[in-house]
Length: 215
Image (tube, rainbow, N blue to C red; front, top):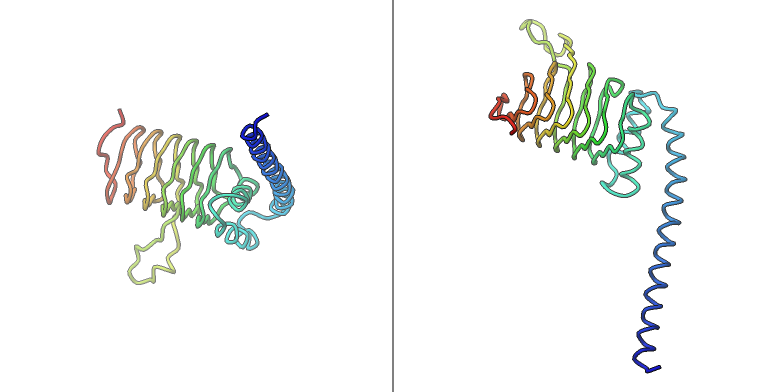
């Protein structure tokens, strides 16, 4: 066997051993992550959704990385504690939920960074929904009709929000209480939605208006 051929065999073997070692390290790391996630799962299962402890844990998981173990931990937290949470949920850092006991999330839902959801009344998010960064969804609103009473003392009104399947909500959108966002619709970035959105339509503006149908 020639020297060059022997060198190639040694080179191949070294690369092969390195690949095997990396794979073994990956398996060990994933195993320990799995054990740790099971520990957190048992901890989260004991929390009362919306309690002080729940919100403290939410603050912690919301600050984690957008990938890796901390991302999986954040998804586990919501999957275990929300009243309904479907498969393949992905939630980026900075997302915060208030009144989480009224929040129902379907399958394949993606929430980008800093989504803020206040569910004074029930909020339902369907399957295959994309929600852009800095979106606000609020099923409550302040009462303000009496000019003689400070607004902060006039209480709130709460109305259900329904976001149907296959909806894309663009960045920096605000969705107000008592609305239905129809199936397959698109909300343009920066919109303020204060009325129902028909299925398979595109809306934009402040306040949002229908600009076209999806065809």
